[in-house]
Length: 290
Ligand SMILES: [Zn+2]
Image 1 (spheres, rainbow, N blue to C red):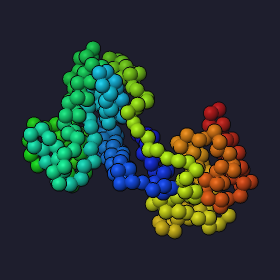
Image 2: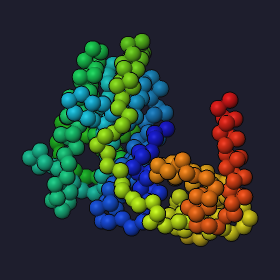
Image 3: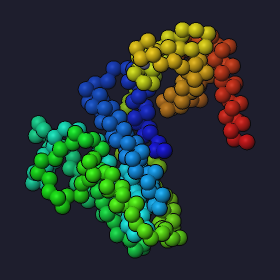
């Protein structure tokens, strides 16, 4: 399973707890849409590609930094895939990419070309051709001005594209695994261009917020919190676990004792109960390591 990008996780925690300006809202919406598209692609592809090595979210740096949404090492070919979740109509004109309102957007085909150039530097010792494509995961996407030779797999053709990739009858050899190992070792774990959303911890709204709809949840019994907006239920222990994770993402996990968790969740649980949950979670964590 693909890891959620840190910034998206951070924005999900912050969104119900602080006001976002319009630019931040747009970054948040785009990040959610992008991640949903990537997960949808994983679900519709990975299970059918058991003759391939799949590497998701590979970050490489040669001359410049590049991120590859999905790289598939098949026996005869390397597939470099950029996954886009564009909805609606777009226009391609004179190597420029526009939305319906004729606002220029980043040209994904140029981005793909540059990424392929970077990838070549890492794969040149291995004798495999690179086949680069943009997968669009939204059936409503339309591109005016596109031609058949463009490296694009529209959503309606995804299934046949997967069959085409899976149809490679050769088998993987040690050289393919060596390439995969080399690429994974070259992966840059820190995306230094990523701007994390700024926040002021003492200003954040306290409470328990629903993971599905962001509404505020309240304690409705000795054990559970309820979201009245969507009907989701979550146990106190899950709330403590969720809070620990949230505080870790916010970078203040060192202080995440019972008192901080009580405040963070809106002072609805008593300290003894929180500490019991913490003890349980610690013990459980420990037993997982054994
Ligand atoms: Zn809800």
